[in-house]
Length: 590
Image: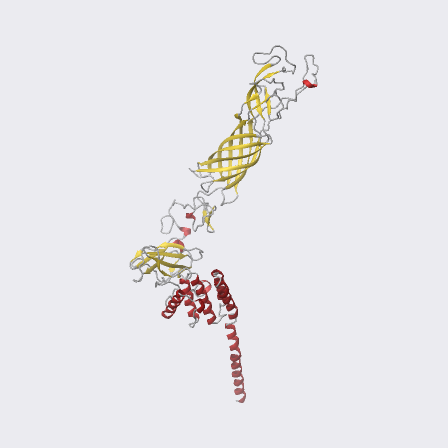
């Protein structure tokens, strides 16, 4: 018996010692982060708040509350943090949020009090209302539901009593009814709600219903389990707020579940019908889009929540209208195309500059040929006679060219295309049949050096065409739009081509075709010692490089096929020339 009694005594002593020694440790654990939290509290209120940097103060206080999770801080410290956060909200004019924080402070510590040095009349009134809410238990239910991660959610703020429905099923509209107290003269009500998982709030005007206002959150915003959050703003005839049920910081919540026990409804109405899921949503059923329904007017880069808000050919991806595929893997109807191919015909019109001595051979920008010889260049010695050996300026046809093009839109949100054109020119200038030879007299003797001509020999015409270009489209988001016009502008920073054009010219040549000096009395058109040569083709020769700009328009025949017409201005260099080039051709967008 002595052994048993001693054994029991030792066990009792051990348990007692454990409780006595463990008590300080438990107490220490409960407030182990009080010092960290109060340090952030003091920085927020003594530095940021007094500097009117409310955002920084709120961030520090939120950080302090986060560190106090899982009972890491004592209740008085938690109360002080909520009081401070409410004071910050009040300083920023957010009295609804301030009142909600005061409620949380009083629940954590019934002895929580305002900061005397920072108290205003508005804050004192909000604190009194919070005390009444806590004493009456107002807001329980909606305010005590679980938030994300199982954390207690904030009590819904507001000065209009409201009890949300207990639950709702997935893909079923959520009824919201707010009864308006007699002392509030409300003419309008706006429901602001946020679907589960969405970062954005949506708005819905609430029609008058009995003694209040009622509306249903649509089923397309109730497509998954989780809480739908909302608050209601009541306004008078002038549009000024006169009351709220909940707030953005402390909203009401309705749990969305796969199965529910009772079906909620608006007063006097049947419960809303369940909508078809998106994956099997034929046109005509409630909640399903109508077949061929109209699309929105939002273009590339605009914020969106659904594809129907975006223009035809765009889909809503990650909150932005852009090109992509509709849900289900199918291509979006009228999908935008980013690869454009074209087949072009271009007419070259060279602006010939007016000048004299075009057939004298001393200007490399001009070469004269005998008409109809296809290559016999004029190497004569024109007489200096007014009305001859000169041309007037003006546009002259310089041939046509056929080209293939490819352009690519690299950025979905920017209607800018970069591409290239390759082609071949028909026309241009003839080339000399052979290198010029020495001129000889009738007996075959070479003429003296001073009698030889000094003409530049015309180089072969270069028919190849190549250019790179950048094109920007206006008035819409598609390159080819069926039944619509899409204007655009473009620039060709560098290209490789040649454009030569001719005008007729008359000369009085002092030599015959063999280069021998002319004798005799001439003619009534030419002075003595020269012969009249009529209608030589004087070609203006341009450089083989160019830079260009222009504008055009595409008319869509189908969503992928259109016809484009444009006008391009080409500056030829290094031998200068100005070319106007109307162009037309079909384009294919893929």
